Length: 544
Image 1 (cartoon, one colour):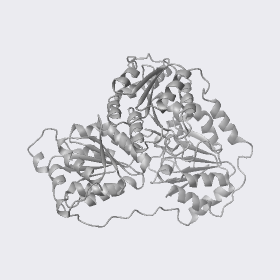
Image 2 (cartoon, helix red, strand yellow):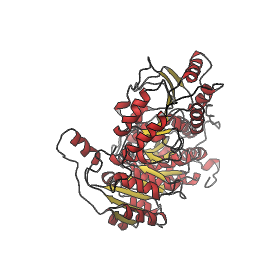
Image 3 (cartoon, one colour):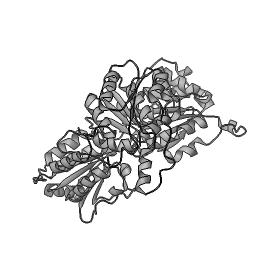
Image 4 (cartoon, one colour):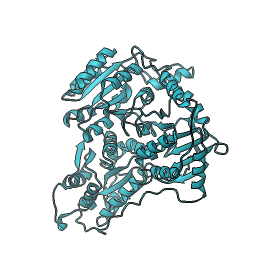
């Protein structure tokens, strides 16, 4: 830890910070207020670096990005009232995108709140619907609260946990209630019994099996087990957008990602419906479009559903349901099972070919050309982030991920304004890797102030902005409904100049060659780079 303290000098906030450090946390993000100064001081003393940002919403996404790179929970720090509420969007995103985020908010003491009203509100009531749990820190129970928060945030389906910290409690000299730390439970596999034996029989008999992989499998780190299972039984697999790269997408059995693309669904949905066995490997359908709701009938199709929590969503149903670890479950089901030849008529290659032909890789200029140039010019170890919007759908289908979390996005909550801070947090945690964010111009404008943070903290990602001066996806939906485009247009701005004003490199490009040159410069730049790629209105029509 950053410094040693005697027992008599340790505050409740110190016990909290030390426990977070022990859990692997090394970064916290936020904006200080008087109510969290002790907390920030305790984090510093424990060895956790605090990064000052321009908005608490961005802090939450930077914290999420650090989790994706390190595996330790992210930390968001916010002062009372408006500071806490500024972070609501990123906290709700963490809840729906299954991200372990520790949210630390300052609050006034309970007695003070009886007679003082300025900026006073019930943080715990506000956060209860969008967190897995919410606590109020006590002095002698600070270590227990921290231990519970970490366990709840990281186990099962991960998610955010909130800790409200009264000013006087943070400063109180404390003695921990218990020196013991709870040991995380071992991962579980399906128990022996008729359901497991039935799953093995179905696998042995299947000639057209398909696997759908999702967030639970990603959080279970099940990539190696999925790859081994699919290779052993020749099972093609589809991933959700956030599970891209759990097995390298160059793998011969990978059919790419699904979630929001009608062009991809046109090929993938009939293929899934043709299967005689569907294995949902950690498939959390919170990312999926309505066309994936009740896609199969478990009364007529054998469906094995492996999940982190019982199915209460009813987006789909399984014929056999296992609440268990994804990798451990696949290993048990595969044990002493050789299966039989599957997809013997070349169907897998046919689907892969149809998916490739569905997207305009060779367009002269436009959003697909931009993605194609970036994929070809940037190294395979590039880490990418994506904002919500039309570009995200196209990117999620065309961008090849070579590793888990190679493309990070808001896919369950689908919020705008996340790509830039996600890229910054990614670059902080992985400074030696190339990092690029993909944003629409509207989403970028939501967080443009964080360019100042990038300059101040010497964070050097590439920020690519698709510039068409419109809410392209919403504009497209208006046209599809034969509505007049209204309330979707805004000004055309000089984003390169904005970047330069904040101390970065800024480019405006409108061709493949210009984009190639800008990317080449960006890879060796000594500051962040923003590339504004201008495209025509309506460029996404028919593209995804």
